[in-house]
Image 1 (spheres, one colour):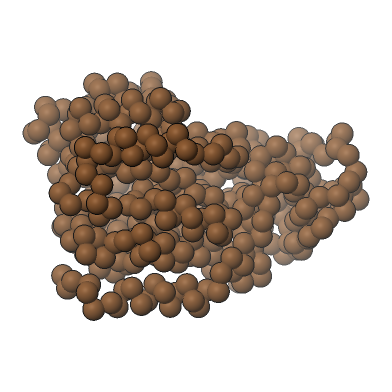
Image 2 (image 1 turned 60 degrees about the vertical axis):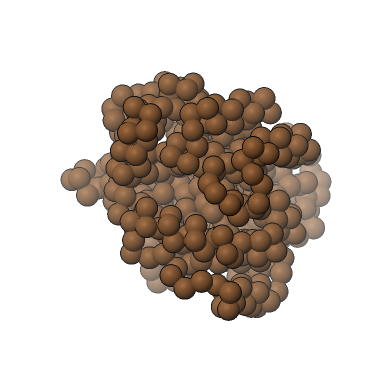
Length: 459
């Protein structure tokens, strides 16, 4: 049931039958459970049972508490329980540069950021910045992120330390003096070794990042795509972020970015495009026809003056659209819930209040984001058999009461500071607003030390 008063909800579709009465690792119980399943099922006084990092059952709390003995419990009374949020486009280590490239165009932003990166980035510095980004994300209920940045190996180590779900991999950007020091001529073989050595893990898939059609040639894009397909990897590319980018690519190659990617045969279900602000009807049709997905980054697009992506038209065409924050330089935050609000609001500006509704915006941050990553069967909703990524959002604050409609509450009223508990793969990373993986003060002190280092250039 979708968008309804939770006092009158049919939970007959939630299957708790046929499950052995036995022990579970974690039982989250007593809250209003927003499953984000296909029917939009809401379970008042519901529960989620978890074993071995997987959701075993979802249903009424009385039933699941009678059925299972839990090694660990979360009492979610007075709270909303929802799937973990999915950030489909970010640059986590840019937390290090937050506030260093404000109130400029996309091109001015890139100029500033690249200058800072060339002086500041190293494996250790990226690890410190990602540690702060993970802490920020966990506090905001974000359980999965797709991260495009230099020194991805360092980011992965940090995510493993925390037990947080990170999708990342080699990045390709043909620029002089890349931050990681790997010449472009050596990057394909380096990426091949990286992909070949990756373990198979639940809720994760291999990824390659091709920055854009303006930092890579058509031949380079084709080679990177071939490598991604060889390993069944997701390919992620910035595309059509603003009018200037479109004009640049069209002048160089005679085609707009999405037209070029289509002509090269890169569009398809294993391609996720970031931004897509400047699209024609023909390009939208091509995305829909090929099953290409989009990461919508409304906050970053607004702040850089790029415009507003044609999300209602993309959705009407059947394109899968997830939500991203972009990096903490262009958006200044890794708050996916804030992106939900923006996505639900900005598209109404054209005069249609139904353009992107509350439920659609929440789905973009959960199940649609998971589908955009090619992981919709494992993540994005609270259903038996999926990975146990979930958030407990405290409803005690005045701005969240009364709870007539959980979709509306999440999209228009809730803030990331309302997140009380965050669970990834069945592991509680945030409990009662206390971060579990690290000493948060030490994490932030490490970030501040880097941000104020004397070798940082002034811009």
